[in-house]
Image (cartoon, rainbow, N blue to C red; front, side):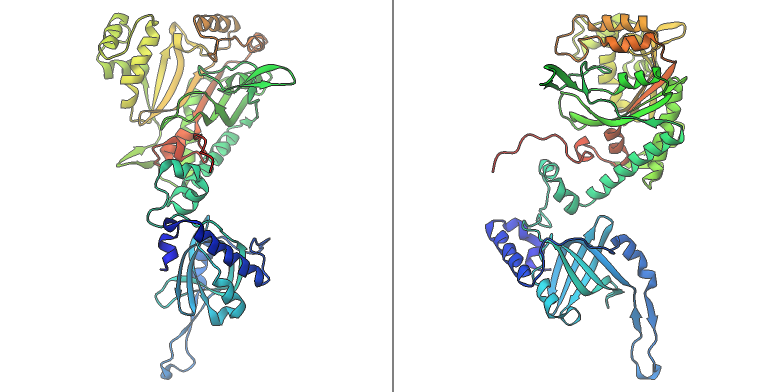
Length: 508
């Protein structure tokens, strides 16, 4: 392996770029465009590797001469980035990588001719090249494209990260995702798996008769969740607008309009903190089904996740660090109150016991509604213990203002959250469609809220829509980024978002 392949980036400096620019000049002198152009007919490297079964052995004409048999392979055309290079006299060995895999290419001076041999001397790690040749094996058995013709497609003027030091800083990897995808093992595969998961979700919903829509991302009133929004200004109308914090209220308007099975898969924005589970910009799926309820949504959630795992080429029992997560259906179903009692040891219907427990564990109960305090205890002392997958059912109604109450038990909301390894992945309701009760709950929820809070204004148009009659329905929200984390054994949400929010970089 040459010096460049092991530590080019580590040495850094303007000298390396100058050397690459000198090679750029030499490529032009050869009458070639160093920035390439259309390159038809090349096949994915994974597909080329699969053609190794076409390599045949032709016996020698006279077995008495001792001449070894000859191997013949198919002619192939590949394109990709040079990620490894080694020179050995009049031979150059290089590894070519594309988004399906990598393969060795062998460039011989005799085989490619003087001009292309001169071109090969201008190759650097990170360059994008094309090659025509025979797929065969070297004497050591390495599957290789034996180059017959070379094509220069793009010159990399900046060196790649050093092989062993590489991109180890998480923020640098996220900021320079283009290098992370190429040079950090498993990253490209993770994001391609994310794509398969999202494609599967859409396919599952289509198979169940749902239609995909696109709602507005700029809202006059931020609603559908309790979160602080990003605020912008529309100059022509001279009004403040909010980047959406949820998809819910516009999708419910479509239920009123007769779209009985509807969903949106898109970005939402919340002006809140950053953590391994939170990014201010994230991807949410929201689904609404007329004539369904939260039990319908449980079935749909389970099917959607199971099909996504299968579509991404995995078994239903997945790795999670040193443990495993078994997504084999049916998922466990437990009530909120049962889990509360199990993990705190106190009765969930005893407000005074909850208050004493909270005060004794660092949670200030002063001025808090009993159910709000109870939910704070649940979040801090129960959620982390939910290995899951488990559907947590029947939340306190007072903290669920958009949810239908349980028949005969108005203090309980028909709501579930799906937890896996202590992380909330899905949230669903039997949707409240009583406009008078909805108006009353909005009014209660707004009491005492600060002006900048997202829910500090009532969406009167949404209430008007409900008065025209929204059919009974089930609604579901799934955090796509968190789901991808679980299905790819990834601990940070920033590692499943291609371009997470970062602090601005200092000017060079």
